[in-house]
Image (cartoon, rainbow, N blue to C red; front, side, top):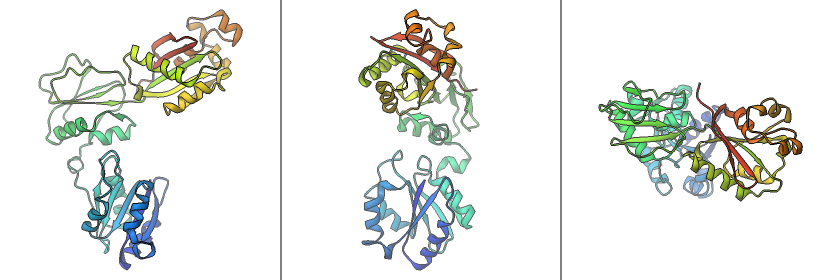
Length: 337
């Protein structure tokens, strides 16, 4: 995280200089003094609000509130905001405690600077892992912040929460009831957390939220020169046919003779996922397990591409092979262990 320390007084500047020495692999600090920046810190914020992951105001809380007011949007976008008084007594997590990382940064600064850390989020005070922190920790996509807030509120009030997952991770909450079948939900459950990359029908009569694990792997083969738009459409059609969510894509893969296919390369960039390239030897060891083609064997050197590639990435096959006019798509899931 790139963090800017903002100081207004000589005492505050001393604290800002000390924080500079706390940089590590996770945090990189910059110190901006009000008197040294043209137009002051107000001007600096206007110019750099989107260039930093967080800001530490070494000032009164009121100054921080007034300075950030024109720029804050919502909890999914706002940077971490901390306030340290210029005597170095307190370090306050002011904004974006969870998703923005202000609470973690407050803990880090307090432990290393000897300040009293002040964190006011309800879950942290009760030792509960909030839903958004759980999602962030496990790199889950959050579909809806409103429903996350609702479920977290139920947890703060100690309500019984159902938990359905296709992953190995479990949220840290004492009154949790694990569910194996979404069609059979205990009547005493007040809310529901669903962790799945499947499209889930919204037929629940209790508050619920869905977190999407990135666990879907796409094996792909195609004729020469197939353009990006057609490959993207083929993937979207395959996901629709299998009731899968695109946000759950973990990685894509193909065989080495297709590694220079621009359409495949650009499709992986479009979905912002890695593209794995597998050798003829790797694919050839398992292509007998899948439907093969003598033409593909003669042309490429193996009987099949998309299915064995998807299998290598995930083992648990969801869609063995779907054909889209010169494009083959196979889908697997990587299950939590």
